[in-house]
Figure 1 (cartoon, rainbow, N blue to C red):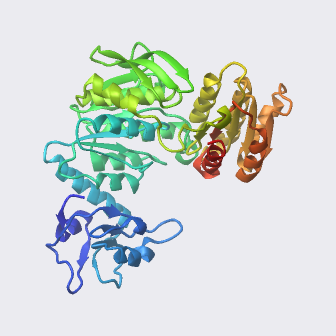
Figure 2: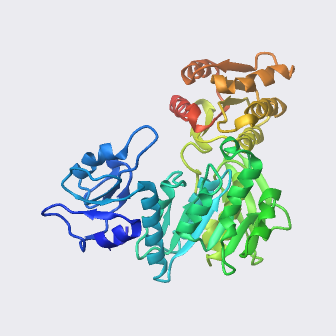
Length: 470
């Protein structure tokens, strides 16, 4: 974090200072990192004691102090030998501090901020854009999927006076949450990738999801740029809700930033990238799955707006070989077996894209196996969407399906009800049972996709299979 005095931090968080004898005073400067996990705290850092769903961060404050925390931000005074700022709400205080830090760095005149949202592809697009912008100047982007009311401000607090670019991934589980993050960061460029059924159960339906994602562009200024998916009608409709200029990306000729000549293989995707300037270049994109081309286009569009040269954009895109761990992560290799571990998140859109990729990259006669778990947070749409994915797997002629978990069983039922299979679909209750089955089932040359929501924990099954065939 940038250097601030205790008094300035207290003012930013609307908190009161509690000092200890022999410790810091109100004018002492703190510039360490900000953490909500005591295990990450180092000497001189700030620990925010955030109450959680299952535990309370205040219980871990002693550990933070032992590890060298210089300052605690707490909701109640603790009997610990370190300076504390007492606030009404630690999460709100975290956001307020991030807002102040962003404003101070922006005032230096160098910082440009990109906000990224969408039902799918946020983390991939953020990682691609970081790879591009790091070639130009100091860049801060969120770790993993730090995109909520805690993770996003923690990312913003990593800014320093030298930071030139901030890429802020912004997720939400309800209306108003993206707007809150936008007010913290105030992006110069806002990207909306896609509006799908991911988290539709939490939002209360697809229309509420659209309203939430629209918050990315609603408060952009006329001098800002909204980068919108021309191929998604729900995203395209957001153009009437922003004062910003619009830059369209997509696969159609109506998009200013687009891709043509797309060819998908087990090694990635090749395509021709066309920028709004009229420049174009071939790209050998090693991130597996045609659907990730759209994420590459969004990242390229933002980079073009920020003045990055086409050669740097292409070189950065070609340097990225994996979206993120557990996202279309290619593993295995022994006996020609390929394991694709894509079990960090799953929605109907991403499940469809992953299954289509599995079908696309297989050679004639090569066996394909889809290991599928629950798509969570779909609410009342859950049953029919699990049914639809099961039917899709049959229609894509996937050789073998293994469905894991009670919540996903409808996928198995829908496949066997299709009537065209005889034993090619199996259901097991646990990942351990799935591993035992697959250990016997996988043959040399097979391509195996593991796909589920995070809650199903199939990502660890994917890891085990990857190790088995490494």
